Length: 106
Image (cartoon, rainbow, N blue to C red; front, side, top):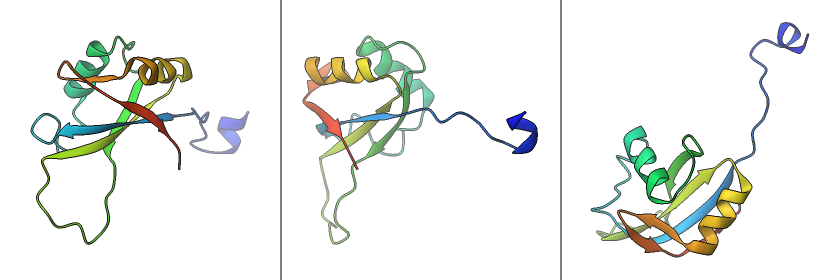
């Protein structure tokens, strides 16, 4: 009934974010973050079920930040709360190196 009344209506799925700090730009550049192969690899490294990571984005810096960076922080969005809690407790792994993870809130 709702689908016929409101075209394109879908259920809202909650996303929980975690921040991983100090990841080398050479390992995970912002250009390849949307690649599904990279997301699948991160899910495998962190023992996360497939299709749990929704997206990965870089943590934004100030506008006047023009220096060359070797490391950056990323935000990983996962749609299951218990998986997020496990990643925070056990740290997040990128290319088999573990990085401290914290809860991300807007």
